[in-house]
Image (cartoon, rainbow, N blue to C red; front, side):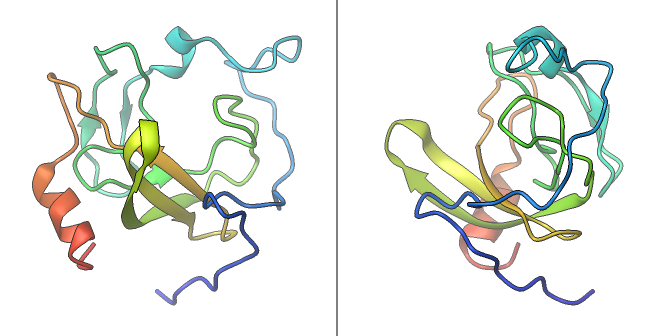
Length: 140
């Protein structure tokens, strides 16, 4: 699989423009700016590695697989689930960001969109420390 060329990005790592159009989603309420945390915090099966991923129990919500660290391009804005792309997002690197702590910077393999996501430290199914270390060492 060929590498995706970097697109324009903001200093914080997120794209300045979004190449994907909105899509209808049964969790998305067009009257609300974002969907509720309960609707966002759903378990899923990872499209990359097939791991069964359970909802977080620490008050946050899942946005990537804790086993392989891959994500899926589903948001135009964090939490809205309105992106039409639905491409897989490859974990590119780990960064430390002030109050957010460690974040995984993901790039969509379909459209090149870049978004950081916090490392999940959930006691039930936290992110795989070996996968995080491998990514930090450049082997992700």
